[in-house]
Length: 347
Image 1: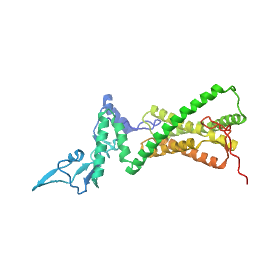
Image 2: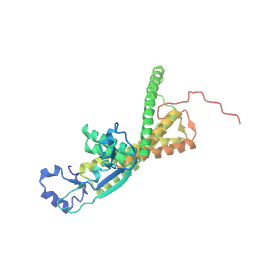
Image 3: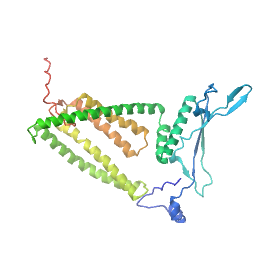
Image 4: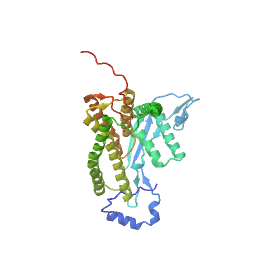
């Protein structure tokens, strides 16, 4: 395979050794594939004493079976399964001309029949992805989901993902009904451009929060870009630029989530949120945390998944600390001040 370009410090440049190696190679040789070494070999032997029906052998296991005839009975030798899923692209080592020794770790473990058949199907599925046009890198990411993740946690993730799709479908239906309601209200309304005192204060505090937070985040983004340039290695200046912009997007995404907390603090109240919307908000906040543990992603993106948790936990504290003001417009653009309120219980 074509080796990945080496990462260097953009200010100090390449080392002398790297420059000498690059000068020896012709320009066309930089994009040519070279041999790589797999430093790990994983062997699994099925230990279940299972008696198969000779007339209906499972096709997935049959190709791994070696038969021997002992009298009138046909026996199969212990099934040996070479685990190809555990071989990740990131673990491959380039074989240089100067290499005289290479490390090799041989792992041996027992495996049950059910787990053996599962890994066989997963291995065939990854191979099918490459046949359908997926790149080796994409197929390797899929392998990492199954290899680097506990199977029980993976099953839980699929279960949660199914619920997430259901919640998105219900939220889509609610959005349609919400905009139908709003359209009818706009058609019946005769007052435009009027703001209540609560809405005016909300907008004022929102602008004030954005101004104060920008004073903090602008220097942090610039300082983070300079720090990464000095201490982190990159493949090129373009790579550093893209990484700095992405970190800026994450930072400003966090910035736009904070003004609501600041408004709640200044007004000493929280806007009313129906329990269905609140449940969806809570579920949608923590669903990203599950995928952050099983999908290979940059550290900055993984941290961005947890920023929602911090904001939501602060919101829960404010919801417990401050009273609910139904006259305030919530994040979905709804106000509940016109709905009849229950009479307070007599003490």
